[in-house]
Every structure is written in C-alpha cells, then in structure tokens.
Amino acid sequence: MLELRSLKKYFSVGRTLLRAVDNVSLTIGNNEILGVVGESGCGKSTLGRLALRLIEPTEGSVVFKGTDLTRLRRHELLSVRQHIQMVFQNPFASFNPKLRIIASLTEVCRYYGMDITAAHDKIRQLIADIGLSEDMLPRYPRELSGGQLQRLAIARALLSDPELIIADEPVSALDVSVQAQLLNLFALLRVSRRREGRNLSMLFISHDMSVIEYLCDRVAVMYLGKLVEVAPSTVLFRDTAHPYTKALIAAAPRLDKPRSGTTALRGEAMNPAADNATGCVFASRCSRAVIQCRTEVPTLHEFSTGHTVACHAL
Ligand SMILES: Nc1ncnc2c1ncn2[C@@H]1O[C@H](COP(=O)(O)OP(=O)(O)OP(=O)(O)O)[C@@H](O)[C@H]1O
Ligand SMILES: [Mg+2]
Image (cartoon, rainbow, N blue to C red; front, side):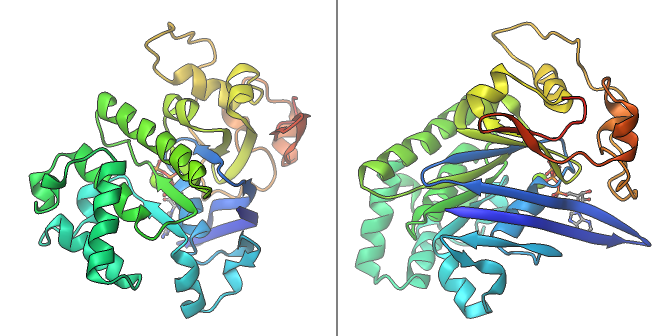
C-alpha cells in the first residue's frame, strides 16, 4: 500500500542541521496497521507529514500503490490524497468552530464531487459506522466532547473512502475509557472495510506503548529520527531486542503488571541538531553501549524473521 524509501527530512536550525527523519524505510501492507512509536521530538509527526507529502522530503521517496508521490505535480497529488487521509491529535483544532458539523462534513463531500443527497446518505451511513447518533450533526464543535468530536474527525476522514489513514496521536488527548472506545473503532473499521472487500491500512503514530500494543499489527520504533527496531507487534512485545525499546516498554505505565523499573532510561536524549553521524544516536543513554556504538552508525539488520533492529550489541 505504502512504501517509504530512504526518507530524510533535515531542518536547518540556525547553523546546525536537525535530522528530524533520517533515512527511514518502511512499508505498510494492505489492511495492515503499522504503529510508529517513540518519545516526543523523535520525528513521528514529521514522518506522517512526509508520507502524505504535506512537507517535502530532503531526500527519498514515498510510493503509494506504485505511484511515487514525491514526483507528482500539485494537481496530480490532490487526486491521490483522496485515498490517503489524516487524523490529528486535537479534534477541536481540526473542525471549523463556526460551522455546524453537518456543514463541515457536507463541504468535504462536495469537494469530492458528491451531490447533496449522496453526501447526506454517506454522512448518515458513516455516523452509524462510528457509533454516534444523528443528533450530533446540527451541533457546533464546542457543543461536543473531545471523544465525540474525534469520532466525527474519523468519520470525516472516511468520507472519501480512503485506503490509508495516517493517524497522528489520535487518542492522546482523550481520557482512557474514550481512548479504548476509539481504538476499538479503528479496529472495527478495518474489519468492516475488509468485509466489503476494501482495503483500509493505517499508519498509527503514538508515544504510548500500550495503545500501540493494543491496535497495531507491526511496530516501528523511532529514536531521534532513526528507526531502531521494527517487528510484528506480538514479537516486539515478547522478544524485545533494542535497549531503547526495552526502556520504552519498561517506562510505560501498566495496570495489569507492576513496572519492572530495571531498564528505565538514563540521561538525556542527544540533541537532534548535534552532528551525530559518527555513532549510534542512543549510545549516550544505553547501558549496553560498546566502543563501536560511538564510532559507527548501526543500520537495521535482521534479528529474526520479520524483526529488524539497529544495534551493534545485538
Ligand atoms: N518546521 C520545522 N522546523 C524546524 N524543526 C522542526 C520542524 N518541524 C519539526 N521540527 C523538529 O523536528 C524534530 C521532530 O519533530 P516531530 O514533530 O516530528 O516530533 P514528534 O515525534 O512528532 O514529537 P511529539 O511526540 O512531541 O509530537 C523535533 O526536534 C522538532 O523540533
Ligand atoms: Mg508529533
């Protein structure tokens, strides 16, 4: 469905170069939910924006169903964007506060060329799919809860029947019970689309390991712009390999198990603007660092089938 090839996004900050996304290659299969996880500032949102070409990559390409998005002209890109939609963290910022929900949703349908009857039918069907009642439609965004509005943001993203959704921290601003409902909604949508014979893949960005574990088929762990570990979800949480992933999992609060606390993160993350091309970006915080980690950048290698890791110590 989507292939990110050696993607780089460097920002010039003063005199230094900030490597927000540094040589990331990833694929998302049909109907697959790929999670991208990592601490704040590691480049997750930048990666999401690159995948939709909302920002231009410094290098590398984004291939969606065989089409290289980085080579498309503006008008060609707009027609592809219909198949890729984005959902953001803050639903209040993603709806026009002056428009009733029905007006916002109808506007999107019109943009995609539906007439008013088709638009209203589509909206009604999606409102039912996301488990909301039609009483929400005449309301203004301020008259809805964050959870209700985020459901509507998901419905809006689905209006164009996308095959790929890029969701950037879509549940992070919500309380835990609403988070769980929305994660179930994402999972159910995929099942229902599959039943209709359609694809719905997702790139799901979160800093929350438990959210990722619950929803995602495969997980990519990012640290300061680089991928450090990629594996199917069940494998990643059972046979965690990279010291950073171990630390992230150990640091995640869990209700069902006491925290082990043994592999908690030490020290500060390296400044992403520092010229770190000489070694592993995680070396300064890693308990397993060897001399090679300070001198040579580790690249992803196969650790077991379908499980790759960038670490000299493994
Ligand atoms: N337009 C920009 N100009 C300069 N630096 C930027 C720009 N956008 C992002 N950055 C920097 O790139 C790095 C990655 O930012 P990004 O927003 O992708 O992180 P993130 O993983 O999404 O973090 P969070 O979990 O806090 O949302 C950060 O150091 C950020 O300051
Ligand atoms: Mg972000």
